[in-house]
Length: 318
Figure 1 (cartoon, rainbow, N blue to C red):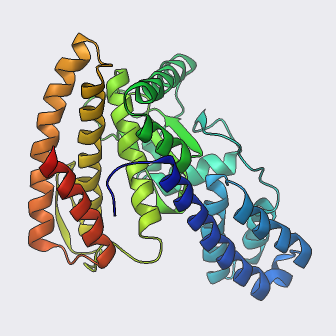
Figure 2: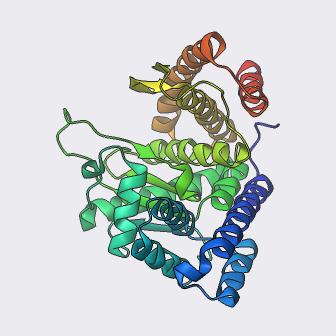
C-alpha cells in the first residue's frame, strides 16, 4: 500500500464503494422491493446507475437509513427512503454548499451522521459561508500548484464539502471537521475552524484522508479492538476507540506530507512558510504520540498494518 495520493487511487476506491453499495441494494430490493413499492426495472436502473456514475453522499446515507428502517419494521419510512434513492440526481463534480442549502431531510441526515451533537453544526451566515468557500477554493488552488497529486485525489474521493458554523463562544465544545463512513464522498468543515488558506488545505487533506481509509477498509476493519475499549488520541481530548486513534494518526501523517510538499514546491508566502514550520513540528509530535498508542494497544488487521506501515514509512523518510 502506498502513502502517495493519486486521482487514480481515489477513483478506484469510489468505484469499489459504489459497487459494494449496488450489490447490497440489489439484495435489499430483491428481498423487499415489493414491500418498498420499488418496481424491479426501477431497481435495476438504480443499481446500474450507482455502478456507472459518481453518487451523492446521500445515496449512501439513505441506504443505511433504509436498512435501519427495515430492521425497525418502519415500513412507511423505508418506502420514503427507497423513493429518495430512485430520485436523487448524479453529481458531476465536487460541490461546496452550506449544511442547510439542500432538502431538509438531507440537512438532518448530515447533522445526525456527522455529529455526535447535531446542534453544534449551525447554518453559516452568508458572509461566513462566502469566506469559507473562498478559502476552500484558494486551498484547492494551492494544492493544485504545490501538491497536485493530493488535489487530484481529493477531487476523486469527494463529491461534496459541507460547510457548517460551530459555536461562536471559544469556550464551547466545537469541531474543525468531520467525516462519516455512512456518507461516503463527503466531509463537513466548520467555517470557523480554519482561519487561513493553509489551514484549509490541511483540513481538506485531513478529512479526505478519513474517506480514503473508509474506502481502504470497505471489506474489513482497521483494527480488531472493540469499540468500547478507549484510548488517548493525538487529535482529541476525549478518549477514542482504537479505530479512531489509527485514523487520527494516519491523517496527521497526511497533513505533514501536504505541508512538506507545499513547502518544497515553493508556493508558500513568508507567513505560510513560518506557519508550515510550526505545524510540521506539531505533526511530528502528534504522529509519534499516536503511533506509540497504536503500537502498544492496537490489534491491527492486515489492512490496518498496511495503512500504518505506509504512514510510518513516510514519516521515517520525512
